[in-house]
Every structure is written in structure tokens, then in C-alpha cells.
Image (cartoon, rainbow, N blue to C red):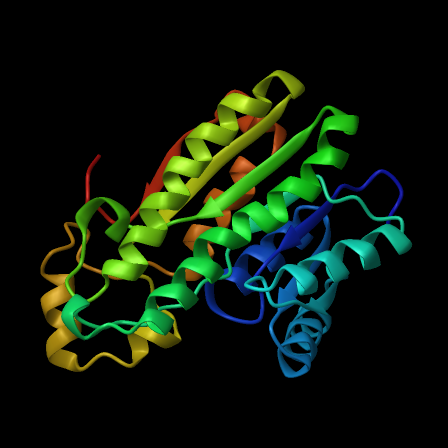
Length: 247
């Protein structure tokens, strides 16, 4: 770890919003560690950082498995790294109408999107409390407030993230640790590229700014919340959705 630099751990960093967040934090001077679910994903993260001229590394982690997360923190301890910034970005969708949704589709989304916050925040808080400084940023979604048919599992998980954020912020604020959420709207990613032109146009018609967001716009908000400039913001959900939803 570079002298004087804070370490930042970003889950789900192999592509999309997570990769943009990892890159932005690296540019801002953090020693970054990204997670991916496979060795292929790890290689993709490290290749992207190297090609961007940035330092950082990646570790294979299954955030839906306690043993895998425990192994991550054992490795960080061995490497004498105690991240003071945590971005919980990893997430999955398993869309289906509730009447057709299987137990596995419900369970996988909740385990990955919600239970992972418990697995990651609990051990990382120890180092933050010793340092009396920390930033936890949880990635939610506009659908946590709006709802979305066919996504009861995903919407429930994102609403839970926002509730978790507010509760934890109240628990750790006295130690100078802030906990916030960022809720992107429709952002140009691999997921939205799969939409038909008709679906894309219907989506854009609902957005006052008339366009999809980009991953860099979300990453800059996360980076702000990780900075000293955001020291008096905690327990909040920052919406990045072009006006699609106005809280």
C-alpha cells in the first residue's frame, strides 16, 4: 500500500458501474482492491487498471458465500491491508413474475445483494473504528423507490439496502464513519444494451433529461461520498437518475 494512501475495496468491479467506481477511486489516490466472482473477472479488472495506467489489484470473491468473504479478509490481514472505504456494488438480477419465481431466484438475489452487506460491513468496520474514519457506500437502484414489475426480488433487495444504510449510519456515526447509498437510474451498461430499440425509447420518454446515464456519472458521486468533502453526509441515498424519480 502506498504511503499515506487509504485502501478502498469495491465489490463487483469487473465491469459496468463497479469498474468505473474502482477506476475513479484509483484516480483519486486510493489504493484500490476490486472483487470479481471468477479468475477471468480478476484478470479483466487488473488488465483494465493496467491499461488505464492505474495501480490496483483484484481478488476472486463470492459475496454470497460467507467462507469466500472470510477468505478475502484473511488475505487482506495477511497483506496488512485494512480498507477504510467499502463500496458494496456487487449484485445480480433474476427477473420473473412473482407467481413464477422459484425459491432459488429469490434466494440468490437476496444473498448476493443484501446478505453480502452483512458479510462485508461487519469485519471491515473493525479497522474503520480503530482509525476513527471510514466510508461505506452501498449501491442501490431507482427501483427501490419506484418498484418494477417482474423484479420483486431485486426491488426488495435494493429497498433493504437503503434501510440497512440508514440503520448502520446511526450506529457508527460517532466514530466518524459515514454510510450512504447511491441509487442509479437507467445507466448504459451491458444490461441495458440488451434492450430493444422500442424498450429503450419507452424508457427515455420517462426521463426528463432525455438520456441514459453513464457509469462515470455514478462513479463520480460514489467518489465524492468517499472523500473528506462528504464528511457531513450520512444515512442518505443519493439519486442519479436524470429526474426519472424525484425524492
